[in-house]
Amino acid sequence: MNLLVTGCCGHIGSYIADNINKIKKIKKTILVDNIKSNRFCSLFNLKKDNKVKFYLRDVDKKNSLNDFKNIKYVIHCASMTNAEKSFGKEREMYRNNIDCLKNVIEFCKKNNSKLIHISSTSVYGKQAKIVDENCEEKYLKPQSPYADIKLIEEKMLQKNSDYLKYNTFRFGTIAGVSKGIRFHTAVNKFCLNAAINENIYVYKTALNQYRPYLSLSDAFKVFKFCIEKDFFENEIFNALSGNFTVKQILKKIQKYKKNIKIKLVKTEIMNQLSYHVSSKKIENNGLYLNGKIEKDIRETLKLLGNI
Image 1: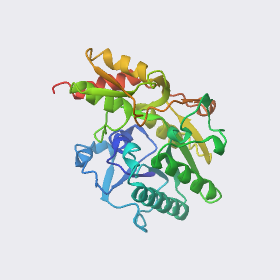
Image 2: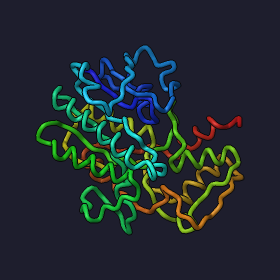
Image 3: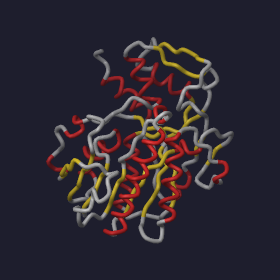
Image 4: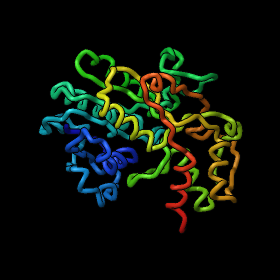
C-alpha cells in the first residue's frame, strides 16, 4: 500500500520519513514539502529500505497533488505551526493552513484515501480541570491564531465526514529529536536555552501549571497504529505521552544540565497555559502511549552537547 506524507521536512514529517520502514503495510511513500523552511537536511541519508520518493510541492496550491495515484493513506503535516509567531501572521497562516487541508481533503475524496489529520491540544486553551474530546465547543478556548485554525480544520473534516475516512489527533506539545527538529515549543526551547547557558523564561505563575506533551516516538506510534489496524473512525482523539508541569519539565532538564538559569517574568509566555488532558479515549481503542519525555530531553541535550 502507498502512503503520502505532506510537510515531510518538518519536525514530525522528517521522523516519519526516517522510520516509515517500520510500518510493514507501506510499500512506497511519497514525500511532499515546499522546503520554504530550508530544512533540506531532512532529506539527507534516507534509508533505501524506506522506499520513498520526494516531490517539491506547495500543498496550498490547488491541484498540487493531482498526479499522485493509488495512495491508500495520507498523513497531513504540511502547515505553519509556530503558535507564538502566529500573532501578526494571522492572515498568512489562515490562508496557508486552511488551503492546504482543503486540497488534501479533495485529494482524499477523489482517490478514496484515508487521512490522518494532526490537530493540537492547544485548542483547549486555559482549563481549570481535566479535559477530554467531549469538551463542549463553548469551553474550547484557543489562545493563538494557530490553535484557532486547528478548530476550523476539525470542523472542515466533520463537514466532509460522509465523503472520506479520517482521524483527527490532538497532539500534545511535541518533544524529541528528528532531522527537522524545531526549537519553538516548550521542551525543545528549554533544552536549547539550557545548552547555551541562556535564561529559560517562565511566566511566574506557570511553574505548577500542567500541559500535555507528546514524544515523537509516540506520535509515530499513532500513525503506525492507524495504518496497521486500518483504524479510521472519523473522530477526534487526544494523543499525549503525559501531562507535566513546567517545574517537572525543568527538573528533567536539570538531571542532565545542572546549572540552568530560570528567570521568572511577569509577561505571559506562549505555550505555558495550564490544562490537563485525558488520553482515555485512544486507550479504550487499544493504543497506549508511553514515550519518555525525559529520554527526549536527554537526546536533545546530547545533540547540543558540544556547544
